[in-house]
Figure 1 (cartoon, helix red, strand yellow):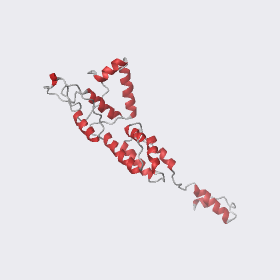
Figure 2 (figure 1 turned 180 degrees about the horizontal axis):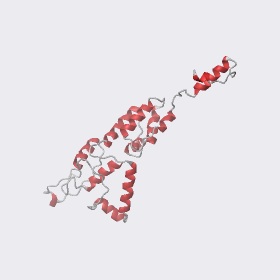
Figure 3 (figure 1 turned 180 degrees about the vertical axis):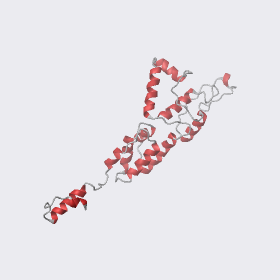
Figure 4 (figure 1 turned 135 degrees about the vertical axis):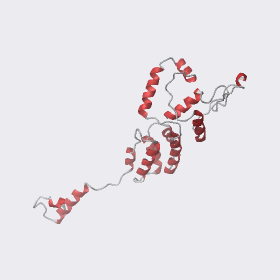
Length: 220
């Protein structure tokens, strides 16, 4: 062996010395078993989707002997900010199977057709830009959220109609229904209809409340 041939002549005087040199040399290449602390470095990367991360985390769990009750806490610390992380914090899953089942729900949310995922860095840029453009009084901010101006730019471009996204979100149980609007007899014969409010005062695509709700789903 190469390591043996490189030993200086006369440095090995007994079999015990040879054994110690052998063990010292090959101990460097020894693979040590991973411990539970290894999972704390399996962190969700900036551009990594939830599906990709959950798959990578699950594979890492198979290599580590760890108490199943700790997995939810570890994943919560490793996830980027978002609704799935908040869900774990609010009600920690008791097992890996329960954790994966709940993760699948939020994976479907992330992969809902028509909702484009944005990166945290781009999200921060949009939020900072939107804040500088809307530097007005608290009253004006509330009014703008209720009735945004025509030239508003903070909404994420969609690849499906808001009605289609609403239908998917309702099936997934991830959309919050608004309070009923007051009935206006003058609008009862209107051809417009909002599926979100179940009201005829405006259409689904015109609904600013629904636009805000979809935007919140995208940014969480």
